[in-house]
Image (cartoon, rainbow, N blue to C red; front, side):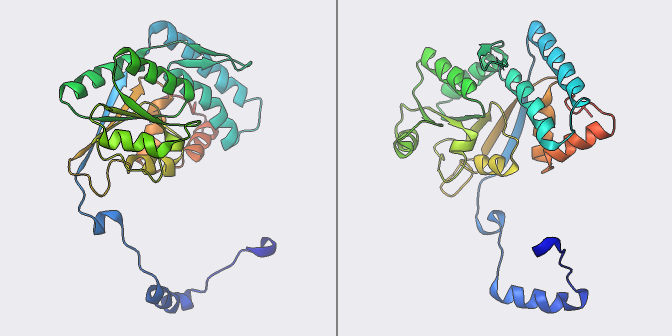
Length: 265
């Protein structure tokens, strides 16, 4: 409220207010007004290499210890989680900003999915959060000689990339950065979407899923989540699927004496 005042709504006026509101406003959900195909979700658990898991646990331990020496805020906790999330995708960024490839576990899992989809002659959408992940995915597609389109930061002609994926039979895969490709585009040439990694934003997550599940889609949609076992991947996915506030959940975990970065808490 203005001037730090908190407005209070009088309960006696509630019924009259709702009547006036409903006389000029109407809300309908996508499920109510569109006859869309069914959706299915599948979690593919990936095991990081033993040396990578050891490195991950060390970074997790350091991140938890650093919280005790700083202000425990949502921003602080999410910042610590960022590097852990990057590692589950196969990359590690040091304090100088240098990026090192540390794992191919998710790429190997994605390679198997690609082989299956191509054998079935189906198109595929792959979404990821981090730039090094996108680079690695595109290198994999080049090695397999699979035609693909991409929408990410730095791609200028988005419309042409989307058109190729939708209309060109030789363009089998769409690779997108969640924040850049999750809004206002149609990718219904595919009915399967792989989340290689996840954004923390609920709105980005829901918008990204809607790219294949929308008007003109004729097949049931499948969402595949690649999650690294015993890592933050599981907590992020659970928060998004439960429509929970990830930042609040992590801070509450810490204040309750629980390591916010560990799975299964």
